[in-house]
Length: 135
Length: 401
Image 1 (cartoon, each protein chain N blue to C red):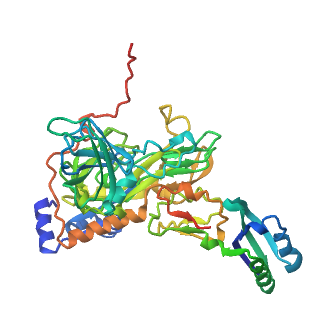
Image 2 (tube, each protein chain N blue to C red; image 1 turned 90 degrees about the horizontal axis):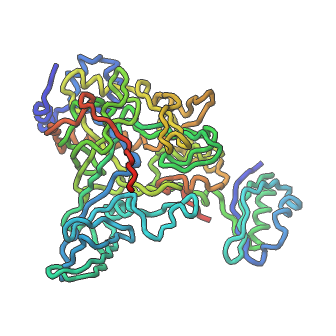
C-alpha cells in the first residue's frame, strides 16, 4: 500500500474532463479531495490524498502525466522558510491537523509535511510569513 | 558574599569570568545551593525575542544639494510614512506605520504584509530603501522635492530607539466570544479555542531582576544583534503591579526604553512582522546581563517557569472594553505544557515569543562576555521600582465643547 498527498495541475484543455474518477475506475485507487479550484488562465488545481497498491499507484500517476497533468508532491507545495521561522509556535493552534507542532522539550516547531492538508490557514497566521505556498 | 561590577569586569578582562544563562543557572543553584553558586557565578544572561510594537529608528539621511528641510514636510521610506517633525534631515520611522494605500482592515482581516518593521529589517540587511519627500522650501533650504535611494552604510546615523520593549510579563490572551478575532496576540479562536502568551518566562530579562536592582538607565545590553543601552524606563512602566513572594509580577509591569546603533545590528534579530487583522510590528531580540553582585540577585535569576504567573485575559470583550478582572492565573510551566484549563475547559496554548531564539540570544551574550568583548555597566540611575508608587494610568477623556 502507498498513500501520498499530491498536487495536480490540469491544463486548460483537460479542465472539463472526468479524470480523477478514472483513478478509481481503472487503477483501483482511493482518492480524497483536499482542495480544488480553477486558477488564472483556467488551469485546474487539485490537491488529493491518493492511496492504493504501489503498482497501481504508479500506473495511475503515469496515466495522469501522459494526459498532460503536472503532478507534484504536496510536500513541495507548502514549505516552511527555515530562515524566517523563529520557532515561536503561534501557528500550532491554527493548524487543524497537527502538522505544525511545538516540541515541549526542544521548544522548536516541527512541520510534519505528511499531515499537511494544504488548508493554508498557517500562511497568514505566521507573523514572520515563514510558511509559503508553492503551487 | 558581595561582588562589585568593577570586580566582575576585571574578571571579564582577564578571561576568567563565569557566565551562565538564566536557564542554566536554575540547575546550578539546585545542585550547589545559593551560597556556593553566588561565589562561583559572576553573570547570568537573559534573552527575549518577540514582537515589540513600540520600536523604531531615527535616521539622519545627510544634506542634499541643494538643501531640503524635511521638518514640517512629509517623507516616506519604501512608501511607508516616516515622521519628519525634527531638524532638516532627521527622520523617525516607527514599525507599525503602513503605506497610505494599504487597505488595512477594509478587507477584513487585513494582511498587513509590509510596514515600518519590514522597512527597518530591509534597511538593517543593507538593502537600498526608496526615500521620497516633499517640503515647503525656505531661503536656506530651497528644495521642495526629493526622490532617492538611501542605504544604511551611507547615512550619517541610524539609531534604533524603542520607547517600550522587554515587557516584564504579559497577558495570556483568550477569546470568550463566538466569533474568531484577530488581535496583536494572534488569531484567537471562539469559545476559548486557544490561549496565546508572549514572554520568555524564566529567561525574560525583567523577570530575572524583578525589582530592577541591577538593570537601570545606562545598562549595556544585546539589542538586535548589536550592542545597545537601556535609555529610560519604557512607556507604561508599571512597577506597582501585583507581585508574588519571589518578586515577579503576575501582570504586565516594568518596561524598558532601549537604544543602540542600528548600523551594527543584524536583520535576523530585527524582523518585520505582520499580524493578520491587526497590523505590522517588529520582532526584536534583546538580551540583558545580570551581574551576580550578591545572593539576593542570584535568587532572582534562578526563578523557574513554574514560579512565574500570567493573567488570562479575554480579548473579545474585557480587553477592548477595558473591563477589569482576569479569568485566572497560570504559570509558564503550565503554558509551556501545551494546554491550560480556563473555565473548566482544556485550552491549547501557543507562544508568540520564541523561546529557542531567547536561549540563542542569552548564549550569544554569554559568549561575548566570556570572550572579553562585552563589559558590564553600572546603571547611572535606577528605574522606578515598586516604592515609587508609579502606576499605569488610563486616559481620562474630557469632552471638547
